Image (cartoon, rainbow, N blue to C red; front, side):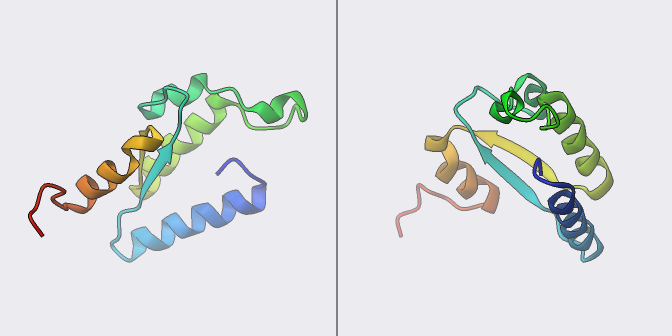
Length: 100
């Protein structure tokens, strides 16, 4: 989502396609930066900013994510890497305590 304009356009088209087919997309972002909700993304510092002043800022990325959520109904979720498996199971409605 924070790549080139072509990548952003493709991402947007995938979201539009899913919505038009009645699908809801969930994006689970693993991070160790303490980002727990979409509003926290504004505090993220892109390491590429030191190389390219045109690199996306956390604020701009957050605004894009909010726009995508509002327009296309996708949901951005955040977790620590060690929480990813459990989060996916909950999202899919799986019961990780089941006895096989």
